[in-house]
Image (cartoon, rainbow, N blue to C red):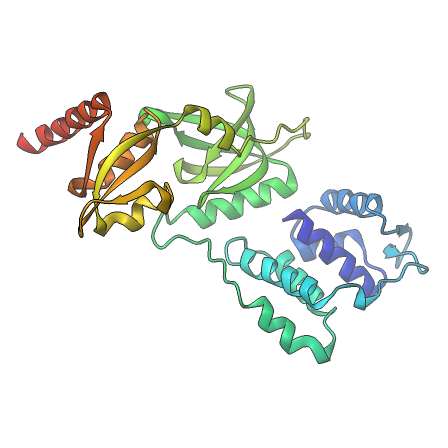
Length: 310
């Protein structure tokens, strides 16, 4: 991730005093052009870095600039270590390893044990229990393409099983609701699109680079829109799926019927996604109201049964 690389570059400069662009590029597995952009970003952020030309030259932090190692509190360092450590489980690369090493260099010896303990109190494991074997490979390839501004090509499976071949400029990796996406400019659609990694196959990184265009960040918060679209339906569930139903609503939506069953006022939108949720509960869920949703569930269940009757 770029922010981790920037932190690492600052730490390296504080440690080595002067280092060349190519050496930094090799260290972080990016192009020298990317390093020059990173140096500009660091300068803009207020850390004064100058370039020394000639033999033995390179980048260095101006001598009058000092970083006090006590600038970070124990809570600050624990939070940084926690975030970087958990992120390294899913996004691999030397920049994360270097970032962790450099952040640890800020930890005073007398506080090291306490800070490391606090950093390990929360574990965020974003890898799936089971899933697409190409997921990590695709994630790593897109991460490299992001850093080097390289075009990527892939086959994409969209709604209704439609497969298309795409060429895109990657701009951002997104983790949303347990799934990885990337936001990119699609050359076929001539617009920004959010692509889900699990629907991507035959991903290739092209040799061609691109000049970044004005980036449109994806809309990721649909809370207000969903509130206007959602209605409540009444379902009757067996207690054995209560934990699964709680993924979509809260305890306040539940009313006990007997020792085995609950009535749930379930948030619902009339589309394929929500009908599939109800179907996934199987025979332990019955839609009671409204009648047209109940009838639609009956129709879908009948269609499924017809397949098995053949």
